[in-house]
Length: 247
Image 1 (tube, helix red, strand yellow):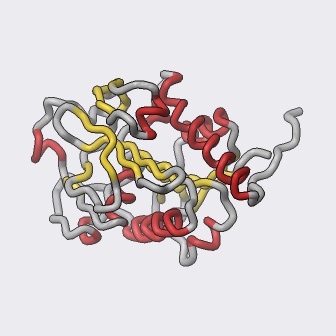
Image 2 (cartoon, rainbow, N blue to C red; image 1 turned 60 degrees about the horizontal axis):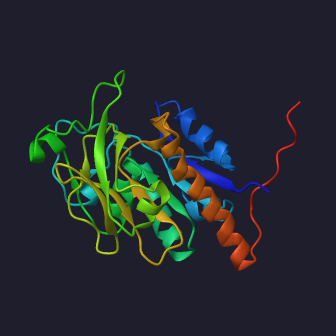
């Protein structure tokens, strides 16, 4: 039985189309999971979350500054308040029902906002560009992050420092009280967080799905392993399903 993993999508136009990079799906499939795509807005997201075994927040546009008391900024783009509110509801569901949650890039930011944290509207305004968190999309942007010893994230990667693919201009400013910082870049930007006492609640600011380094696949592997482990220990069957053999 392969666990069923929901991955959030983004709206790409006003005609009602949603999109997701196939790289997310590939990483989950490679780790042993099946994928269902979740719409960026839902009147009752809990109904959908009841039907999956784990949840991944994908990257995307910026989060509305109205949700964390921030200021408007000329560099903000792709704001979708409906997606913001849907994912905030999903964070609270994941905490209440111990649903495994992995947040990627925008994902770590919405996890923080949902729990009372704030964001840096534009990183260069605060710390400059000594660390290049974002380059043009046609260029690979790598920088080093340091992982906190004894964190789940450090255990997953088996390292305390590594280079990660990065594409963002916002980041956590004030960390939500419930979250624990477990990684940062050289300029002090928070790069990963965990929620203690939760089976799997990890947010990373980088894009592991963009990397060809097998090390980054480890995050997806561990996520799927934890999803399966949770269900085996609780005795609750997986929602997931077995695909028929490929012809």
